[in-house]
Length: 166
Image 1: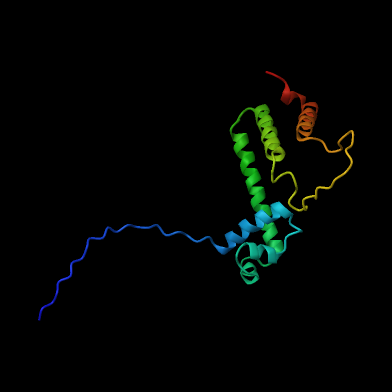
Image 2: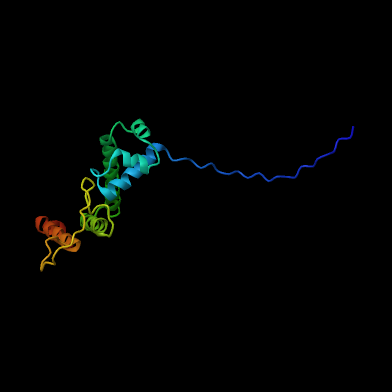
């Protein structure tokens, strides 16, 4: 019996790293955070979160017992993030309280007064719709620069020894 011989070509084996799939809970949290930021906590329902996260309500309720639990987790993460930047800013100026306060004011100004800042509108409020109104001679809403200067001036008045030059 004649058997034909087959030859095999050498194949270079590459190891392809497996992509880890994002956990459903993490996807729900990420989506809810974005929706809460854009629309406000009260304006976003469980249906919208589940739909935007590419899952369903059953998966939502497997991971969170209620929307309240999700909101509590969202606020805990926001608090941890805020304390993280606070600690990082203070540590950069260890031993110099005045520099710490000035750096915190600078960072607070940067975080609250930049376009699209998540700190401009509290997450529990829905963004205010823009309406046309007659221009007034004086704005009732303080500017970020004015508010920052006002806070700094008040701080200087109430804690003068902290602001004395050395």
